[in-house]
Image (cartoon, rainbow, N blue to C red):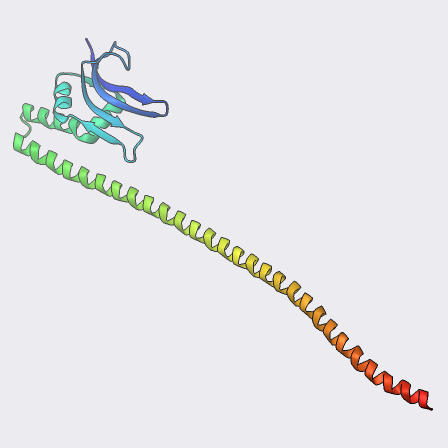
Length: 196
């Protein structure tokens, strides 16, 4: 029986996540498996990988063959490196303390790399949010300027008819006063003409 470490698809359409399972190579992808050793969610940024390190290492030492994707996942978590170092200890290339030291160095470097990736992703996300806020602020300012301009135009139009209505009323009042004065001036002239 060939044993494989592979992914079993779960979730719904376009929202897939995967169980990392140890299964017989003849069983279907999402079918029966021997043991579940982890979860892989590629949708999140960065991808979430939960892996039982000791179980994965044990299955690799017993001869389970990982698929390409699982090999990349196991390599990223350091399972393949640990297996390699333990094989070196068995062969006598170095002792177990040296293997632990080398694995500790790799782990610290890997954690630093992962933290830098997370911080760069967060920084990029903050930049995108900042750009969106700046664009939205500009749109709001433009909108406010257009609204103020429109209100000024409406106020000017409202004042213009009011002043136009006031001007004819003033002209009418002046015209009413002027004929009264004109009639008074004409009456003495007519009287003077009549007396002659």
